[in-house]
Length: 226
Image 1 (cartoon, rainbow, N blue to C red):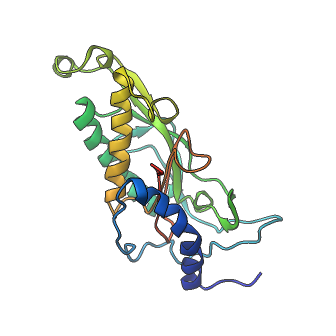
Image 2: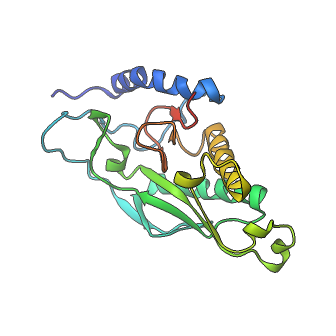
């Protein structure tokens, strides 16, 4: 198929994204702002044949374990997305300290680089195929320190795990606090224009158990739904 100019690609993608993004806007305010200019991967063609063998562009990848917070296993991403992950880790720490009084020890991810199409839109290359996205399933917290323990509820003094699959809709006990952490984190990231451009979560088909974050050359937010 003929290659589509990048400007046209953005128009096409925004066309089918507008309806999805509006679902998130109905429940949560999604700030309207222009995309940050100059992201080095914006020029790469995302339109691909819907069927048949595909090849992903050659992207230099780095092995990254995390700085502010470690990932449970190393991620393989392009260097530009690594900088976004560093900002993400700082936001996670900020929100976790606000909700729990301490930061998690590990971020649990479900993968980064994966050469494939977007499942629901097979004529588009997934940002995973550019090492430009990550799927986050949850967070692992260690035991509270002696100083932190005095202010922590009994159920949060030892180590614990926060998972979208279990806690996104929790309403009772410590689960409710885990839900508040996940939702506050999502809202904080949505409000930032310097971390991720695409933020998908439990309201988006196929994302009940994880957040998907990437830096595609368009804005799409669907985390909370209607």
